[in-house]
Image (tube, rainbow, N blue to C red; front, side, top):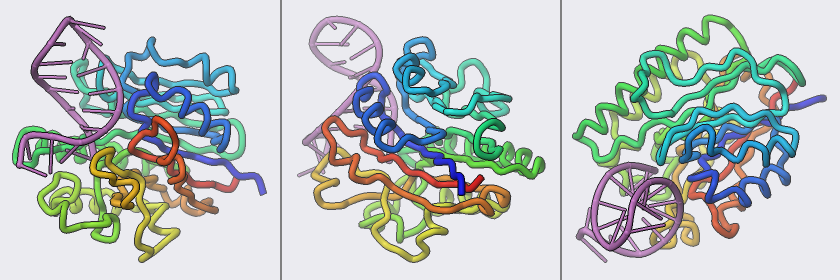
Length: 264
DNA sequence: ATGACATATGAGATATGA
């Protein structure tokens, strides 16, 4: 049966990581790849490198920080850059496109949810507000009853199972009860957390390992990159995969590619 | 412990990340 791979990867600078990115794209050949933290303006993104590999490139960049993109074999349609409520000053953290050509129709968003640290500051308030706006937009998208994949770096550790040392994260913006509650509110709109649904109760499933203190070597990881599936997408879910071996490559991002396979 | 790492900016040291 025909399948399509939809992946998400916080690349931590596409220009600093172009060789790593190309190596993985060639290895995995995803149909759709959501990138976060491209850390460049739209016109600085090395688009031609991926176009030469057969990809369309949809970019929502900004100077220095943040920035998201979607690489796709099928042509993007109905592109949205930014969340409803964003203005010209808002960080570039959301881009969405519809793919109706190729193996099955699906709408995909690349999401870079704010970190929010330190808690108790305006940064945390901004995170919670952003989650509320994302949830509102997700609610609208669900009304269309499409296969929908909201993929990205959510900066949310959903449960203690999703950290090697959950006790180290108790006061962190990624794991505070209010953060997890807002994530659950979003899930409860009817989304499936694809990775966890495919591996219920399984410990040690991580997508991020800090650069510091030998976190990778000690497997001190957290699961913060998620693919949320609408019911129509969940019905087509075949497999999931986390390419954690990429974290051991030279010049790695601190996140690894995380993906699903959908049937046609 | 405010460090260890890593990147962007801009040309030294600071902001940001999770």
